[in-house]
Image (cartoon, rainbow, N blue to C red; front, side, top):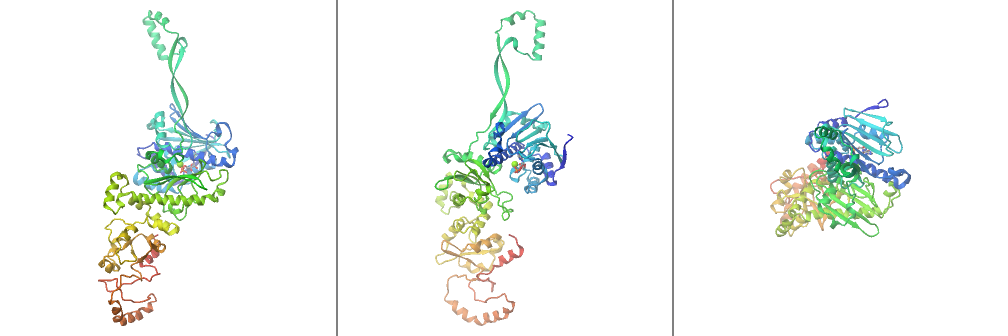
Length: 620
Ligand code: ADP
Ligand code: MG
């Protein structure tokens, strides 16, 4: 093509494509849902813009917000077309090749390790999965602000862009023409495409239509039947060999039924908004599938749990929240510098945004879900919407519901119950729920801790969700409520110690007396725990006491005073001789040791030794 401009793929993108092309990954089906998901995103974008600018959609077919799939069996081309926002020339260059998304290299890394491509959509590089089945791809696109262009690439490190002067004008939107590899012929079968749309794209919010063939019986006058060459040959042969048969032919009826292939658009999905239905009418299977589609998580794992509810009152909305089975790859990586939320906001069934950090606090950004509200205005800009007072109410209710949902994971998990009878009773019909809370905790425990730090209003609710090991938990996780239920009658404070590992803490001299006296001590071994404990002062009227800090009270002994008196000279001398080091506050007789003669204790408001270590290594 004379007007083609050539571009090289950005290096990481090129590497990604190489790996995809040479991948032995057997589930090649995934490309279809990725392209449909892109089409749907593009449709969401134009629909959103049309809320404030009616003209933007145009009229006639252009205004139809739909996705169309067509097959060309002879040329082995599968085309997917949308009437979405489209891409300008610059968009094509940037989005499909020259700007690597942040997820590109982490996905390449993951793929090299696991060979698993299933989660490609979560990394923001789903488009390239088309090269699992194609050796050549054309992307024809028309954006309202630009002319129609063709992007094309054989995935050989380069792509070309040309102004489109030969294809039919699209009006608006994008058509992806996939030139299928020889071994990908199955994607030319209609039934295969129907099956895939059903399986992966059921919850797409726009109609997906297939240009489907249909065999119809048509009555045609006998003499007008156009016989094929073969038939003609055969009949001429027959007539030459057996002339007498000719007379019989005249007795045949005057019309004949023949099979004819016609084409028409066939709708493949029901465009159902699951969240608008009553929860009791939605099956678990439907929730599972909805989660996969929402989260672009097509692993075999089911969500841990979900909550589907309608809020009524001043602000009305419907919402579905999911706890995913696994944390997304960049959950904590981007925690401090991004507003990434996985919550999609709809207003009256129109998708508005999935970048609304006003809806959920950061620490709950691991949740997947959707909110649809009738109480928000449709025809205002995103910026205006972001300031709408109803958002505060929605956020408050969402947090409450989210924390309830997480608490329920624990309540329904037989492994979490202390009570043995209850354990058995629960477990009989709740096998699926067994072990779910510790699974949740392993993936998202850190988020709960960050929540305790950040969300003063819900601190107590969040503290209920905390799990940790203790000097008595024997490798199992336990909760504050369970700890309290085991506290000794004379014990006032909740004891804890911080450090790098359970093994290290178990040997700590700070624990000597506590162990001897049979007190339970919580082990906090995550660097974030030090920060956590600066915010978590008490729980259920009990104070937290770091056993390596000043202030540990283990019950008074009659000998305390006597001991203090008899060692007075020693402590005085010691304090005086160490005073020069400037780091010493006091020297005291301790009741926390047993074997170890002496130990350095941190003052009540000072950093623990562990915190000093963390600050020095900046490991958080
Ligand atoms: P993601 O969808 O996660 O952004 P993809 O690799 O699937 O990542 O797509 C890359 C980008 O290409 C999209 O963000 C979008 O800007 C653009 N794009 C892909 N397909 C289309 C389409 N059908 N219409 C408009 N833009 C598209
Ligand atoms: Mg995509």
